[in-house]
Length: 599
Image (cartoon, rainbow, N blue to C red; front, top):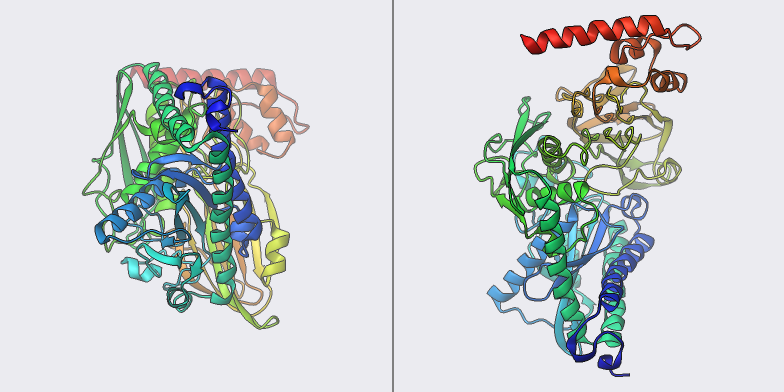
């Protein structure tokens, strides 16, 4: 059948039903790439934790056309920028493009994040004509550098963080370039295990080619292109209409990174959002200057962090390049949010991105509190342990992502042990990690008391303890919210902080920077203990229903002492509410608050 004979596409006009079918078809292409990548990958950080993403990008501009629902939101913007970097490199060098070509790139300054996020970018041809670009990102568990896993908390230049790859053809006409592969494998740890991830990442894009070709064959290239343009225009209109409902004004918020890992002082993100008509302008020029350690953020990650923050607030707007059109970002040159070579950046995607999002939430909650929430845990809890397993006779790098509490909101209490702000990555099942690596998880539990107090309280973080069973290893971590808990909103209290403790030979060690350290030597029997942050509380804690506080105490979320101190609810030894004592305690607190406000 001629595509023009299909219902809804006659005379070049696409009806709404056909448009939605093509929209979902593009989404399904990306979803299948996500699934293929996860199922074929060797590394648990990809196959189990799902630290990866796939998308379709415009052939000329590199703009986002569609991205898989199963991918990390922080990659929404960054893959667009890295695809654009590949396009620019191809044009500048006059590089010929042929079917089967595939570029690899992880350079953070060319639309990237940190070096461990490796991107594959592939030109997609239909009937001999370049139609689009397919791209994906996978978090490789090691990319070389000074410590196993790549999360160097003390790096002062990017070369210390690992191998940096500009856009180069890893596959030429469908054939893997063995010389480039040899360079990559010669510069990373556990290289023998990496080839499986490389082929899985390439296979995911091959699946995308087949599925996208089938969609185009069904509806015709012209119709699909027309649909892509229309979907972009509609997303832009919907985002503008959504923004228009926000009261005009200037809204400010801030967030802090614990430290840069080298200088033990916090880094401030100063967010100023100007809302005028149908446009939001984001200005972070008042933020801290570039830092010595790896908490600098490249501009692609900085912009993507704002995109994902806005998408958190307005989840109903479809995701493509049109979504970003009404968002104007003043590039924060001269701050740690605009990293330039050779600034180290290993913490930008996993940690700084979440502080940027938090500052957006803190600003917009003042304008639209009914749509916002208190700060979530906001850290990926990156922990890497690399060593040699004498029983299996091989080296390993274990990478752990951990969840934390979400912030409370008008819609209810925050979720406990939720994934990070930047993505859907989940903790690898502990049974899988114990099978792969010489470790034993002695505890994995909710961090009681970590939820920020509020009328709607924050969710709880988690505790976990890992004991090394045999051999020697080195532990490194790049986390955050160890100095400041996730901030509350509309009078709510901050959530609990991140805590790390390593017990070596019975002697406890706490990192000087609280949430960041690297290369900590551990031996058989040593223990790593981590507590992740709880979410911030929303609203006055003394307005929380006493019955809900009593239920939280019964469940072990808070002690009776915490219930009295944080919520003003007095419980007897059996957990029953003492109504008179509770009313008196809350009355005193409210009177004190009114006196403070008048002063």
